[in-house]
Picture 1 (tube, rainbow, N blue to C red):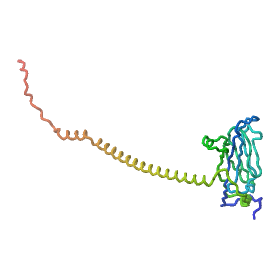
Picture 2 (tube, rainbow, N blue to C red):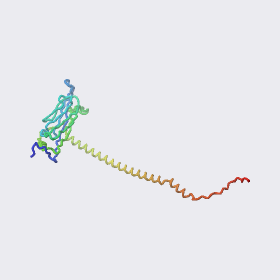
Picture 3 (cartoon, one colour):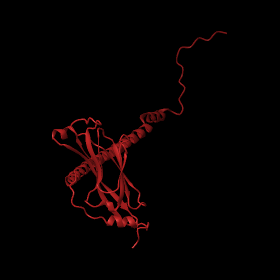
Picture 4 (spheres, helix red, strand yellow):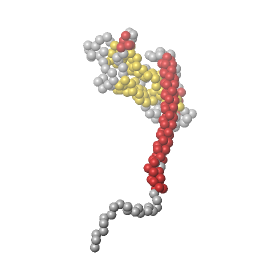
Length: 249
């Protein structure tokens, strides 16, 4: 068996690790007097399949807004999350480093969400959830990384903030509807293209016919007919008009 110092890659192997990343936030009810913050929030990256990510994840960097003290937060063990408070939304960079330094880090970008929509406020929701599903794909991992990825242990079931089975069903249905709509539009465009090609062919045929008629037009035919009726030599007509009397010599 290859040791952890072996950097050779396992060819033809692909391992997929699904993850959930995002944030939850809640409103304090008013602006906090000490710092003006209005919301508490948590940004995170979590395993989708309730497994221990620490077997292959060395650390996670969360890059916050520069206005925060120590904006680069380094988390070296689960849960990979940062708890903070604030009053504004901004983009957070999440950078995942792996146990084998030969594997390049993976970077995710998340827009921190704090403010509920009007419909969510009307429904009485106290907590905002903004999270997303993604997959980390290891293509031809190193021997060390391959062993780390296969040695993960299962954790007790954890309830996600979002109902992902329902989201999957809704997304699958939306994709099917979109494909059906696109298929119909493609069929309609093909019919229109076919009709346009037929129209273009007919126009070209008509133009060719008109050009041919112009080349063989009535003007050329008239000249030919007139030429046929002009005699080769014409007789000189006698002058029968009055004559001046000859001057006597």
